[in-house]
Image (tube, rainbow, N blue to C red; front, side):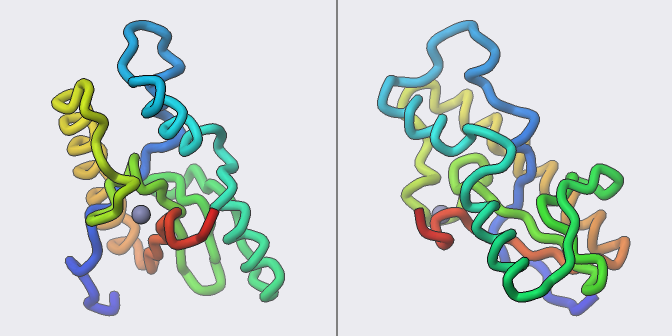
Length: 146
Ligand SMILES: [Zn+2]
């Protein structure tokens, strides 16, 4: 739409469906990393997302949540502005240059591959949304405060 492409870091959108710790199985995190990661994935309604919602709400915006009929099931949808908002965890979405995006030392190859796949998919999602005429806004968790 507005011709503002390629300037943002790779966008990912996968938090809801991939939570490796749910799978049982091997010990893929160190204890320290596990708690760090878990604090990012805890639930669908992550705190940063709630913050954004209440801010939007108090400003009088009308929005809908997790619209499954849109590519990537955007966290927040503002139909009147034809805008979707993704609230991205810095790790899962590999916020460039962010310290929260650092890969765990253990299983670094696993994580690198996984997150690269996510990145590719999310670029697709973003492109699909834009092709449908939606403006895509990415908000990074680290920028929203704790
Ligand atoms: Zn960040």
